[in-house]
Image (cartoon, rainbow, N blue to C red; front, side, top):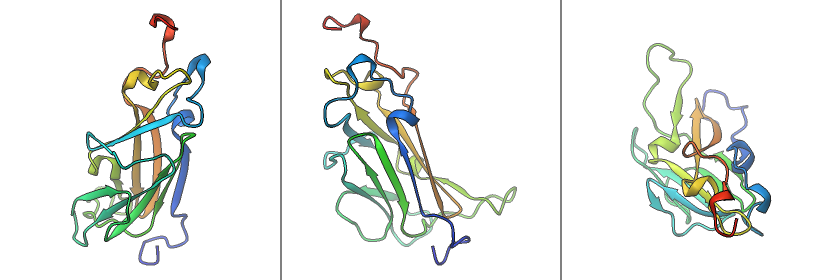
Length: 171
């Protein structure tokens, strides 16, 4: 960003929720056309989400103001997140988040956990016969900004990271 500390650094990061998050769909594979079935932000269903939509992360122009997510672009958009049907995602920083200065122990490296500030992000997926990935607990998507550089990773939202169909009647 022009007013960031490293204007030449890339402003987006990409990954895949299924491969990075350790999701194993078993023999059924992901659901036809779209393994991604839903999104939850701050513990609430993000009902306006459809795979491939751009999610805008916005923050008022005040240090430490709340960060909000919406599908129509809001005022003061700071970043975008696109989660595709195949689990691939792109997190792009479009402006600086207005967050407090780093602590005095390492003043040159500031990491802000955007997912935590949003109250958590979970993405839901299902396999080819409708079983929820990760026992329905979702895949946690962790978005961070390290001194004006976006980073992201995905992890299972609980200890289960594969579908266990052995106990299902239609297994």
